[in-house]
Image (cartoon, rainbow, N blue to C red; front, side):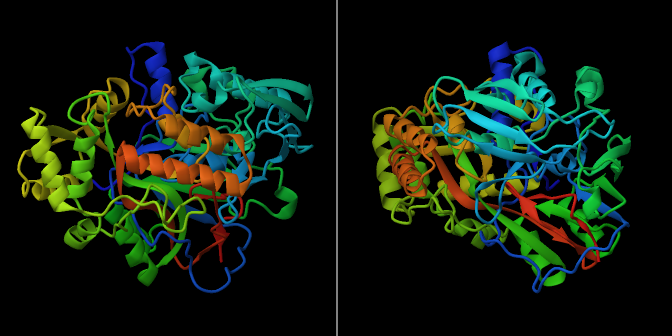
Length: 535
């Protein structure tokens, strides 16, 4: 199977803190790589101006998996998972614009701070109603945020929700107060993690109901759901932009097809209209035969080290492993469309410091370090945890084969079913090194939660004063120059400590047929469902 499987499962049994931590990982945008990442690393689309969408018609979208739930609390906000469904049902309040990387309003009206992030004011559009006719007001937003922050909800977005206090000022105004310290970049957390709002009438039914009976203010409503097969969404007659002729479509059907090659062939044969992928090889093929709208993000395919366990509690072991391998050799050998990474930040990122890159392959130095560690009784002998799918296994086995060229290092590939993988990695933290992938539309709030030493979501156990200072500086300012310097400092800390190794740049793209138009995205590649249509 070639698919993206996301951290959205919260197992029963662990402590409340661990359960919240698992949910929080999803909120931070952390994803398990179960297919290829890659692509050009640059935004691209079909040539020429997009044709106008006609009013009406039906469209079929494909997804690699069915939803577990359709509430905005437990769903991971990722274009490759359930976020297109969230966009259809709820519409985003605020988004990160794909081109400017600034926060802009959509369903909301404004989100501002006058005191450098000590307090924020959210204004809502007047006249908006949920699909059941109830008002979309400040009380509804507060109820959603309070529900997100409640540990009993096991929200995927608790990392952001629990860090903000909400107060209703009037029907259309909400005051947001960051907990602990001012946060000038709170708007980015709202746009990526708390942007979808469910009707209070649905929340009142409880989690056993609201996950399958969603009520939002988005362009579509759920008509039917055949578990494991498809969901059918119909035009919302009460949609707030209906006077603008939106949504364009009468109906969207989202069908589950777990194999990416089958998805591609289904669209190519006109049996479906579009799907979202992060498989570089498929994206390149689609540029020749179909249409592609790509969305670049920071992050990528990553080896995550566990700094709390041997052998990678020793920086020499981490450095030796990364010096032994060559990112460029992976796509050359496997022909999987990966774009080799030189940093966690992609080559065209506004935050990348091109002068600060991961050291290139150096076999002699890698062998020296392996020998040095072995002489001290610290041979680099480890297991590499991956989700059980062909793409992940192929890359892991490639790495293991390359390491056999060296003395005093031994790597075992441990492939686990996705549920077991999540428990072992995110809950039990029983791993030495593991495969992950991260998509980041912006460093905030993801990287702070992922790497700040005191964060409960710091799974790798990285504890770096330099990284902490850089992350705090990046959070505390909205000045592009200050933020760029902060994340340059973060890159220096990454190179010095090697808590992880990025080997392929991250990208996702919408692949669509020639009859589809209106493909516009936000955040990390999510399609605006209101303007999606047919020529």
